[in-house]
Image 1 (cartoon, rainbow, N blue to C red):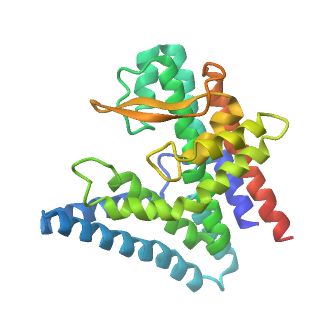
Image 2 (cartoon, rainbow, N blue to C red):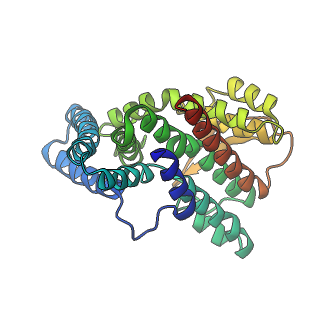
Length: 307
């Protein structure tokens, strides 16, 4: 029941910018740890060890703090109920993802420069020279991948380990977002945080792809979604991202991936899916729908198991 209430809260109010949010605290902690690590050591081995220590210690902190909090307020039923739901709610990012993707969708009406600028808030690539098709593709890829990272994966960890499990996963995901870049600056410090994120997302990414396909029955091309997800599962630098992205590409009969620019450096990425038709603006809305369908199916399955 707590998970359902939290998911409904996320659907209705999302993540208001002024709301206190555990992820903001996580980001501040990771920033402090990075500055401290770089002050202590400059060597490649030293930074890798620091990254490992940051990863392990933050996982313990993110799990134990909410666990101890909830244990100590358990006798105060109403307070426990409210705080537990709030912590679960902060782990789910479906509404936020919907909102940010739709900002790009609407910005396309205001011109390509506006759309490029809006896209820059949700992707880690250079957006200043993207065409309209590339903007749409980047938005679809972001929603597809983050359906796993921001919705299904945290829900799965919450279902297994409660709010502490969800917050532990959010810490892993935040560390990867802040330190897991594959560039010269973060090659060493971010090595272990990125690997930890790969491990934590290994099963959720695959479950997400399957949920996307099953929940799209009678709406999108399920057979093609499953086929492309399996065929192109290795067509991504991440061992996990191609599963939800492949499912989306197959379900919508579009092609994702290809050439991208990451702040001046052109990166040749393998394609995901077949170009059965040209990608269009409405595919942003369709991908958001697929995200919600996958989330709702997971919540239904969880409810059936625990009835």
